[in-house]
Amino acid sequence: MSKSRLPILPVDKLTADQRRLFDNITGGARSKNRPLADFLNEENGLKGPFNAFLYSPEAGDAAQRLGEILRFQSTLPGPLRELAILTVAAHWRAEYEWWAHAKIARTEGLDEATIQAVKAGEPLQKNDGPGVVHGFVRELLNNRRVGGGAFRAARELLGDRGLVELVMLVGYYGLISAALNVFQVPLPDGVAPTFNGEEVSEKE
Image (cartoon, rainbow, N blue to C red):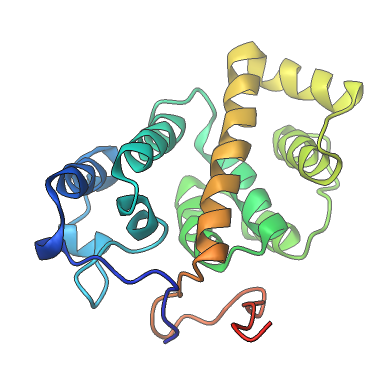
């Protein structure tokens, strides 16, 4: 398994501020029906993007709290929320994010054909809820803005609050994708990459 560019911070070596963030991540809404071991890697540190957050615990705590709100307190329906997250992950080719949220998307009821289309970078053909959300997120990511048609369709589907939460969700998971890609956070042992990696050589 490859190593993260940032050394893993073991639980027993954390400062008081880092430990507070650790407890907020592992004891908050993400921990429902999950044992502590789910959050830890073989080095006894946090998996995914959260090890990086520990290096700046104040900013990391603000970021993780935003993510918690968007995932667990949002008005966005679960399948549409996860579809948006997967669309961001595919755009960034963020391996860990895709692996983690493809599992959640299936649990939330997002169908496999939709997941595979997102992975392949294909637009969804139907102009239903998933098609509206996927089209909106793709347009925002690719064009850095959204045209009137996509805006009106998403607003009609989600309402003003849901639309704002969708835009925030795209921004938050862009942050997560950046952290995962920059710090080259590895997939768990035995998990094959979805996008065939794209790690940057240290020699470049």
